[in-house]
Length: 202
Image (cartoon, rainbow, N blue to C red; front, side, top):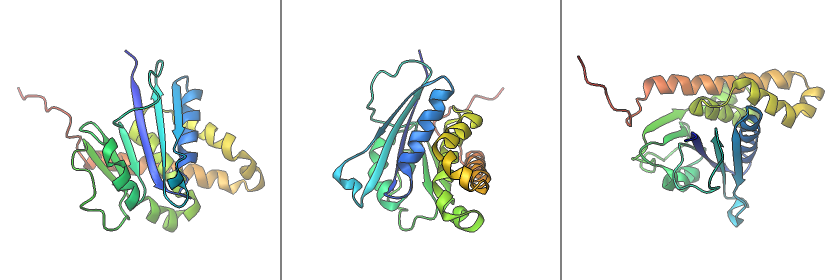
């Protein structure tokens, strides 16, 4: 049976959710996997929450729709509320720790919660514009199914024309993505996966 990873990304318009999803799917395809990206083009896109759905599989993808995500990423308070319905006991829920007033809104049934300071890191260490690239790194780190080099190649295809004009942007974007991977790795060590069964002792 083929292994499949289902991802839901949600944020405000302008946070680059769709670009992240598209590049992730492209990178997965380049890595020889089946990948499906479905954007949300509802009326709510106009000043509302932007949602993207991605499936990555070693084999054929049976259905374009799914009820529960393996990885759910929320980048705003409204996105947190919007994505709760996609969370289950095996879901890793990633959200920006800088979002205010969401303590009571966070899903209580997620298998693992991974808060990361993506907005803060983008502003303080890089540039606000690479916030979505940090999130992309977080998705890569959370899924663990896409090789980093494939993601870099996909970014190059998408943003290569900008890199040609400003070569320093290439290094900035790649460093931002690597930081996102590092932040998720650190959080994984701190946040236990409550869906795992503890093996009995000797």
